[in-house]
Image (cartoon, rainbow, N blue to C red):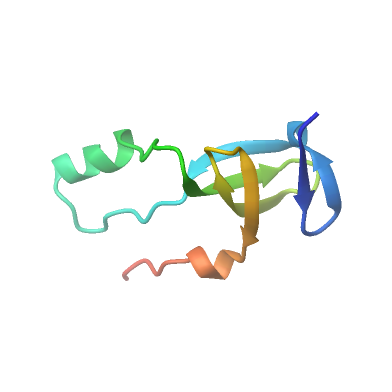
Length: 88
């Protein structure tokens, strides 16, 4: 069984987590082709990737930096590090 080392409650089985997708900054003032590319195109290449994960038992969101080639978690990232401001 694959286990993630949760920074809050320790090692947990991956079955408790939901993969949401890669962390990406949305284009704020974009035309339709740019939005379409944002919605439908993903990086997909193996390597280092920041991903959103949700832990169901605790209701917490995490951002993991994961090496998709080796399938191992490099580190958990503070949510403030991936935060972006939405223009008013």
